[in-house]
Image 1 (cartoon, rainbow, N blue to C red):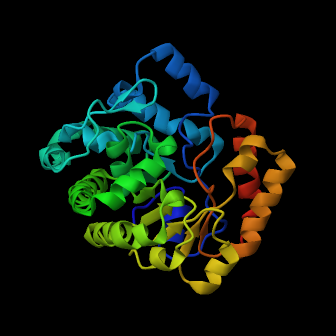
Image 2 (cartoon, helix red, strand yellow):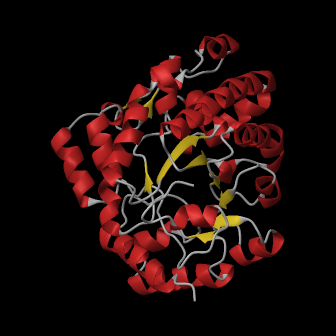
Image 3 (cartoon, rainbow, N blue to C red):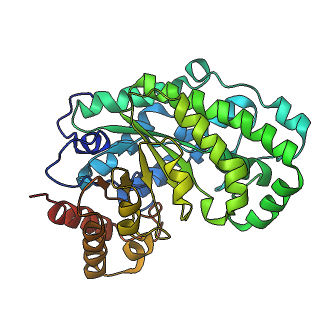
Length: 344
């Protein structure tokens, strides 16, 4: 484990004692931060240009330092590793793919990823963030899960309004689905191990549409990708599996991930009883930060700590920050987490 000034997150992930529960927030770099919004306004370029701008990505990644979080996560998109494969998404402002992937010939045309040569900018961003941090905080890398990427590729745009159509397509074409997920699993392993070799201290896999995936599809298609990915990563670097509001904790526990980031569909106290040595991340409702009072935020944090007894716990949200969230609520969440998360 690398020596860091603030190593609380890594200590928890390695089952070592800490003085308080570490806290960070999904989508903490951007969205709600006035400084980020001003940077975007001044820059004016579409997101894919910003993701490939090394210096600006480093700067945005580091913005949450002022909140007092216990980890920095690289500013990038889950679609980043798709660009070198020939499936290029443009942001207009949301992601758009001119030719959605719907045939076996298109799957076969997806080029294999060599992150070391094709995603050099990601390595530069990771090294640059670590250089700026100077050992102050751990840096998290991440990737979208194969199924999350498949949702985007099949939809050709933001899948949120199309998930029924996507799931019907997956059910109708199992050979296509399996072939696409195999290609994307290989890509994800390559990408995450490249981030690890570039210097991230832990990685998180985002299963971003788990809330709409049935148990049958999860068992058949999603679970095998998780198990394959986590078994292929550098075992010395901790891994976190994020499944958006998925209730399938038994399967998540079998994924091979070191920690599970869970939503409100899973009660933390029940989960801890089921797997007392598992590290759980979460799970304050992001809507409470967006729409609630500071008092409600405090109560939600207290509830999380009561459910885990502050043991093997990383405080986070059930999902990423919502764009409408007042920035003062984000700051309050971090402040109250640090105050109430102290361990005697």
